[in-house]
Structures are given as C-alpha cells and as structure tokens.
Length: 555
Image 1: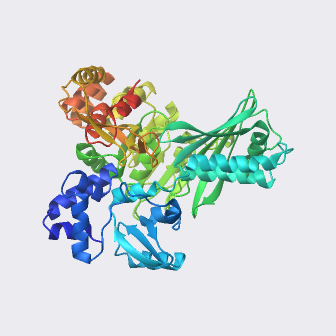
Image 2 (image 1 turned 180 degrees about the vertical axis):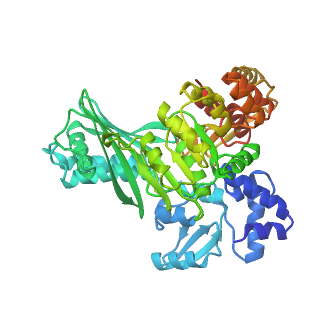
C-alpha cells in the first residue's frame, strides 16, 4: 500500500512535506506513519476510512479490542512481526487478520497456505498492530527462565566435565540465542557461592535475566570453552577465544573472555555480527552542520580523522560506517584492529597479535609497503603508533583512528602529549569526532510532559558546567514509560556528537600549543555544538530523554 500516494492524492500532505518527514523518520528511527499521525496530519480513523474508500478494504482498530490469545497465536509471533499482521478473529473456516499492508498478495497467500483458513484481510495502523502484538504474552525473559529450569531438572548428578550432555547443550544454546533475540551486545555469566547469574547488556545497560545452580555453571563454562577451542581443564588463568554460530539464518560471532574469580570463573561474551551492518551517517545520528563536515572530510585523500570517546561509545561503528562510504573499487583499504569486529568485503583487515609481535605500530608500518590509499588504525595507544599514523597522514594517505579522550578538543593536547610536534598535528588533522551513545525512547510508549521551571533552571546550571551558556526555552520533553516492546522505556541507541573541524585558524592555534579550553572556545565560536547541545536537541525531538543525556555525559 502506497501511503505517500494515498495522502498526496487526498491533499493531506505535499510531496515535499512527505519527503521531509521520510528523512526525519530515518533520523529518529520512527515509521513514517507514526510521524504523520503523531503530527495530526491525519487521524488513525480517517486513514482507515481513506484505505476503505480507495481499496475497498475494511479498517479495524485493535486498540482496546478483546482478542482471544489462541487466535493470535495461529500466526507465529516471528511471522507476525516480520509481516506486521495480527490474527484477531476466527470461525471454523475463516481467519480475520489485520495488516498494515492488506494489499500484500504474497503474504495473504503465504498465511492461507500456512494456516489452512480462508483469509479475510483488514487494514490496521501500526499503533493497532503493536497493540495486537501484546497478545503474545510470554516474555522472552520468562521463556529463557522456563527453558533453563526445564533442562536443569535433567542435570542431576552432572559435573563440570559433562559439557556434552544434551541438557547443558540446550541451556548454553538458549543463553546464546536469546541474547541475540533480545538485542544484547554482551552476555555476563557470573558465579556466586551457590548459583550463577546470567545478565545481558542491552542498549548499554546490564539486566539480570536468569540464574542456575553452580554445578550447571561449571558445565556451561566448559561447553563454551569447547566451542571456543580453549583449555577445559584450565581454571587458574584467564582465557580468550572466539566462535561463530548461526542464529535465525544469520552468523553471529561470540568473542569470549573467561576470568578466574573467588567462586569459579566469570564469562563475558561479546556478540558480533559476522558482517558490518549497512549503517549510514544519518542513521547514526549525524545531521546538519556536523553531517556536512563529516561528508566533506571523507572526500579528502590525505590527513587524519579521529573518533574519540570512552569504551562502548560507538567509535568502531562510526569508523566502519565511514569505511563503508569510502569502500570503492578505486581505492585500497587496509585496517589493523584489536579485535576485528566486523568483516568487510574488499577491505584488507589484520588482527593485532602481540604474542608474535604484531602490534598496531608494526602492522601500520607494514601497511605502508602495501600501496594503501586509506588506512584504519583501531586505536592510537602509544607514541610509536601515533608517530607512524601522523607520518602516514602526511605522505598521501587518509588515516582513520580512535583515541580515548572525553571531548573533541582534548584529542589535540593528547596527541602532543604523545610526543607529536604541534605543527605536525595541525597539518595532518582534518576533523575530530567526539561521541557518546544514548538510549532511544521507545516510540510505542514514550510520553510527553512539561518540565517544571525550577527543574529547567537546574538543567541550565548543569549545562553551564559543560560549557553551554544559554537559556532553555523549550519546556516540552519526553520521558520513558516502559512496555512489552522495550526495556524500561528505551529501545535502541543513537549517537550524540561534537565535531571539531580543523581549518586554517584552528591550525594556527594548535601550532602554538593552545589548551583544550582555548581550542573548544574557538570551535564553539565557529559553530561547533557540544555533545550536550546535540543531546538536548534530540531530547526536544523526543528521540531520547533529558535524563539519558545527562547520564552519559557525566564525567
């Protein structure tokens, strides 16, 4: 169903307005329909009436409608989510289903063959779809707990070495698969005296998921050691490994770290998709002036682009996204990484291996004999790596790398502290991107509220401490609520940024070894927005909350 054509034809919106809303929906991760209804361009009921008039397809609202859970579950939840359909009523031979696109003939035929019912389609809005989705009652967390408990009963008498027993395999597979299903970036399994706790890191925050006995924990650790080709009988030393499995027809790599602690061994697994996601700069949260600076800087063939921020702030994702924009047949791209997080076609990626002397510095030195055009250095950690990176950027290469500093202006004194001459920093550095990741508010349940004037004043004081001295006139913000389709009111993450562009005036300042405060002041005079300002703008738009912005920028 072409929503755009339908609305333009009936003069609810112009083509230009629709395209602007499409761009906005991509930036904030909302559907175009949600934005159109949310901005009162058309109501849900009127949209339903239009569809009925145009296509002779009836419309129904599932909001506050009583639906039999058994009817809903005729269509598996995975298919319901994929196709955006809800079964809401049935007779012995007929099944009524709500669809956000009831003209999708292929889906109608698929459901007819799969269920054996005669299908009667109705148009539903996305809001109705999410309301109907609530009928799939069992939460993933409860399901995980139930599967572990069911298999735990079959493990009586098992010991740590029984890693190949079927119940242990089932428990391990369930832990790994549900981490992927819930969108976790890391799995933590931590032993206590009598039990072990499973935690998933979702959108940057750890959440308890389930527990099991300490005996099962030993067997699960052994099972993961087998998968990772680690030593099963080694319990005194840390071990690192990696393995890959297919989940939902997608290969996922698990990077494993095992550490001995007082009650046994702690396991932390990082989930890495086998191939880099097809991100774009807009989807990461870049926009306006910042986006134009980044696009301009990656067109240059020499110099350095630095991304700064603490661990877990999305620096690697930003670099991979920039690399994907630069990855064309005309250039040779080489990377030295620790670890390689995503594989990228046509990019020569090398893994650091300090045990054999392959460091960032030695790998980078060898790359310069490989006729590279673009080089990515996973992280500038030491003086030698900094020196070679700067020299590579001076001699006809575009160099991308990361650095651990709190803000963009702090990257320049940091390089000078690493014994790089200030005039070399000034002549090679193109742009510095400082970033943090904030959780995005769930579009299904977020709630608008008016901030009290006293709280606004407190907020302004907090902003002044970060270098932003301006009055906040907007009082309408959004807050997290929480529903079945998010985690405590948040779903997904987006970046907040500050982009420091090195122009001629900035080069002069750097050459004279200006402090980070002086560099930041000049950058702000030239239009640079600090991370806290970018965060405020995204909070006003309802992408994130004020509380979340303040949480991630605290120092």
